[in-house]
Image (cartoon, rainbow, N blue to C red; front, side):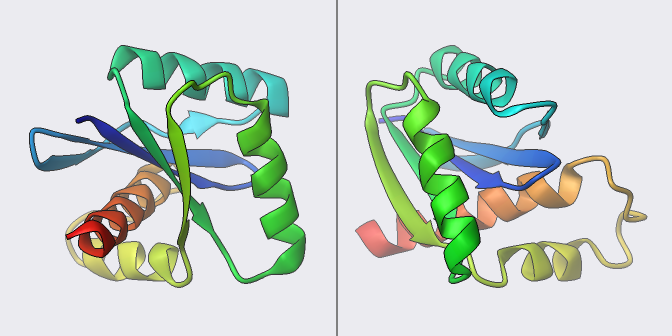
Length: 125
């Protein structure tokens, strides 16, 4: 079973996949508008033949609404699960500290998506 995860932000959407038990961050999707971003995520889900999509969900109520709405725009036919994403971006930044110079290029966002995927995999076992 192939599992994908996304960390939805206002400018970028981090993405990661788990293929044969290996979690890989992917290039983040730059978000110009919701429809374009949903189309790009749907394309990614088809490309990696995802069966499940884990979507990071923060505790902030306004962002929860935005993220749930974004998920509703997807044409994805598999199962969508919402996973607590609190502190995933902070954890991603900490993991990259001293290894990669941090830029706003989506790497932190996609590593946050990989952390969301780790949390999902941990909750399933």
